[in-house]
Image (cartoon, rainbow, N blue to C red; front, top):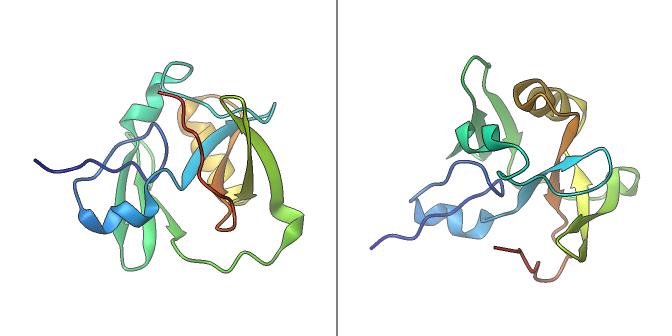
Length: 127
């Protein structure tokens, strides 16, 4: 039995064991700083995820794909913030305007794609 990994929380999953290190590393966050789940936005489930040549590749129906670098040194504190995942404040890094426009256009919800900061300890993801 294979394990399914979800590099972007609540988006499509992968059976690829290489994805284990990236499981729930990214998340969609609304303008109020809250994590967006499939319950709030069922379209997240239609975003497919792939790891390819050092990039997180996101695809969605009717959208061009977007490639996000997997391993970037997070040294720009101006894009660092905290968001709520359940009741936990999680240290995250904003993936920028292009990623925000892509995910907002697809979901129809103003939101941003965030990456859990590598120095953040374990995240207690609600089920």
